[in-house]
Structure formats: structure tokens, C-alpha cells
Image (cartoon, rainbow over all chains, first blue to last red; front, side, top):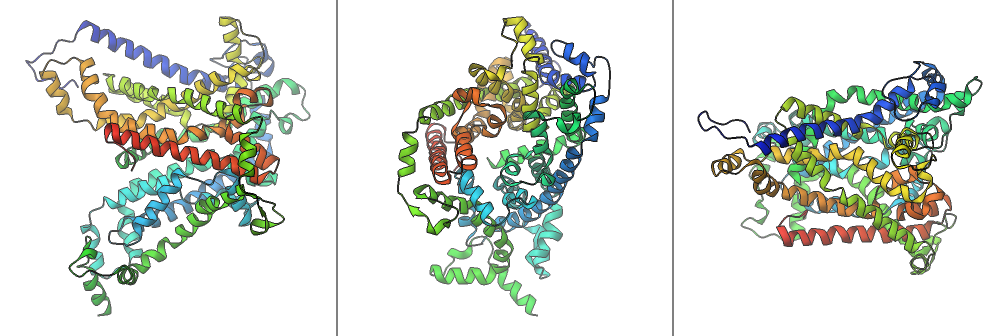
Length: 298
Length: 326
């Protein structure tokens, strides 16, 4: 907005200057409000349990630096198996999601296919009207996925929203790109993977991340379907530790038992969140891009 | 040679020539279409099967809300009971409470709707682009923290010795006890934390709409002597309106499904009075008490209302502003 031509100097009024200052300060306050709880969590996780319990209010730095909580967390086998299960769901699930979504989006983005409109309408309808929790539970149980890790992958194979994003970006590819391949007699399968897929790679990256984050965060479906502890994904383990306050797996047989369970919960949060926050700055631009593609459609 | 023939036939049939010179009956068209596109249909078949089983299957499964469904008897062996479960729900002791809680929580949630719009406008007004990038990066962070962890943090910070409890007790003299154990604290905690977790991320869509506004509009306004406030009021906000409308309609559809996963992680029997919503009730009745038919009926009630809300809002907004989802 500062691209004024020289000579036409536009007077910046006093109230506007004041507003700019106010805005900068307000945004700083907002960032502080976002960060302070997070800083507290990290600081508390590195504090000694007894000092933390005595402290009143929010922490901005560790008091009485100590790594006991992390030692206890890393001893906990549940967190490790939880991580392994979640990683399986994220990797295998996302791969299947993206594969299937890409194929469906390709078909639905073709013109002159008689049933495409009907299919599209049915899919969009399912976005706004669903059977709800109980029938969904009974269906998943009915197809024999109960207590299997596949219950976290197959019932959420396609997200209609992601499918629409993908379809929009494929429909935007100019037809001339495929024409030569068609003349050479290439099949749809070949056109999709050899021509289309490389062209829409940025969108593939976006929906890849969308699916991966959904799998990473999911806990409700696993609560419904997973019974055996060795299949628990990370979020269910976290629920036990953080929501149901069960830290026995980590505190058994120590001296400061009662106190350390306080900081253990914070250390668990850090261990469970750090990986995704560490890669976040690198993937941020893809997320933003995805929202924009969605916006174009809307 | 065979290849070539097939493709010369296919090429001229671009761009909607079904309604070409010769009018075909639907059946003829369908046969012709299938001959030409069967590979495409084969490719999408798995997805259609997926949708039939996992999206439309549960919709048909809703019919158990008109039966006395017993898992042992199966879907077809269960007795048809008509509207019994719906009548029971409407006369349920908890019906009023559930409805009011669901509406109250979602109305307050709806009141936070302008927050991301305002945030986007403020970020857009920042002169220093470096600083605005930092603000965006920081405010998006909570989006990457899982619901379970966020709720865990809320429970820790508002526990009897938790940081937020201590600060609030110093400022306002509230009692040193877990804040989520008293009924009236649930709503403020839910709304504040929801705002904390989503305001940054939700502003992205408005920021992207803002970046799409034609710069010439602003230049013209400047020539006419409009200050920044006037530019925002007469250019920026009108240009954002379509996006705002779409987001509002989408939000209306979620009203009756208001963050039940989060509520389920935060609430406890002591605060059911203000925190229990339709979907959490469905979960407890259906999956803990195994009253499948009854809770499916409650769920169906919920789905129908949600669907109506989207449809009505969509129609209203189309009438008022010409923007709609469909």
C-alpha cells in the first residue's frame, strides 16, 4: 500500500499513525497470549517437581532445572508403542488416502462423463448429512474392523473436502496438456500418473499434509474401535496420561512419586507435540496454499 | 491401428456434444457413455464402494432409530417400533437441558465468528511485512497441537494449583479449586480456549481473500481522498463479504455438532448440567449404555436439524446477497 508515486505525497494523519502503533502493540499482545501457555508447559516440564509445585502462577523459564520428568516419560513403553502405531496410521493411511483421492479426483474432473454430476452431488450431500456416530460405529463393526488398526484407516479413506480441492486443481489443468498423450493412445491410467499427477504435485502436497495432520490428531475413532492396548495410537495414550490423570506407568517405584506426576504430564505434552512443531515452519506454506485452493472453490 | 480408430472416434466428442445434432434417448446415451468411459468408472469404483459403505451405509443405518435394534437379532431381525424412541427423547428428563446446552454453547461459539475476520484485517494493515509474517506464524501454531493435548493443557492450567487458576484468584479472588468442577466456568473456558486454538488458522482464508482484492480499487479510493478507515469500510469489507458468507453457512451446519470431541475431553459429571450436549449424550447412551436405537434416534434428530440449518442459511444468504454454497 506504500507504492505512492513521488510528488503525490499523501499525508498520513495523526490518527492513522496512532492506529499503526496500536495495531503493532495489539498483535504483540496476541502473540504473547498464544505463546505464554506453551512456554509455561515447556518451562514446567524442565523444572524440578518440588519447585514446580511450590511455584504460584505461570512460568516463563524452568525453575530448578531438572530432567527427571523426561527420564520417566522416555522409560514409558506405552508412549513408544503409541508413537509407532500413530506413525503406521499416518504413513500408510495418508498414502492410501492420497492414492485413492487422486484417482477419484481425476475421474470426477473429466468432462463428458455421464454420471459424474450425479456422483458429485451424492458426495457433496454426504458432507452435509451424515448417519451420525451410532450407525457409523455399527457399520465399522459390521464390516469386521473392530479392534483393528485398519479401523483408523479404511473408514476415513476419502475426505470429500480434500477430494474437492484435488478435483478443482485437476480441472484447472488445460486440456492441451493431455492431448498429445491421447493421440498416442495412452490410457486414462497412464495420463493420470504420467501427466496429471506431476502437474498437480503442489496440491498433492497440500492434501497429503491435511490427511497426515488429521490422522495424527485423531483420537475419537480409536477410542470407539480399539480395545487392545498394544494397538493404542499416541493420542489415546495421551488421553490416559493427560485427561484421565493416569501416570502410574511412569511413576511406579520412584521416590518423589506424587510430585513428579505433575511435571511428567508437561514433559509428555512436549514429547508428543515437538515433532510436529519442529517440522511446522517448513510445511507452513503448503497449508496456507491449501486453504487458498479451497477458497477458490468456495 | 485399433488404437488409432478408438481415439479418432473419441477426439471429436469433446466439450458437451451429447446434446449434439442427433437426439439420443437416455438409454442410448448411457450405453454410449459406458462404452467410452468404462475405464474411468472402473477407476472410481473403489471410491463409490467406500462411500456406499462408510458414508451412505450409516445413513441407511439410521433406520434402526425406528426399530428396537438388538445386535444379536441383527439389522433385519429387529422389531419395528415407529416413533417410540423419538417420543421417548422428546419427553426425556434431559431433553431440554441438552437442547439448551447445545444451542448456548454454539451461539457463544458463533459470537467468536468475527474474530478471525478482524484478525485478518489487522494483519493486513501491518506495514512491516516481516512482522506480519511472524504474527501469522505464531498464531497458527495452536492448530498443530492435537485436541487431546490442548484439553490436557486446559485441565492442567485450570486445576486447583494451575497457573491460570492462581492468577485469576489473585485478580478476582476465585476459589483455589479446579475451575472445571464448577458449572459456570465451563462455557468461558471452552470458548476462550477455542478462540485461542482457532483464531489464527481461521484467519488464513480471509487473508487469502484479501490478497485477491484488486489494488486498483484502493488506488482509485486514494485519489478520491479516502483515508484508510474508509478504504477498509468501503472496499475491503465488501470484497470479503462472499467469503464471510460461505464461512458462516458452513459454520451453521456445525452448530448442532459443536465441538463434542473437545467437550468430551473437558467435562465431568459435576458439570453435565451446563456442558452436556446432544452428541456427548448420544455417545454415552449409545456406546456406553449400548442403547443403539435410542441414541441413533437422538443422532438422527441432530442430523436433520443440522442439515436444515445449512439449507435455510444458504437460501437466506442467496436471497440477501446472492452468495451461497449451491
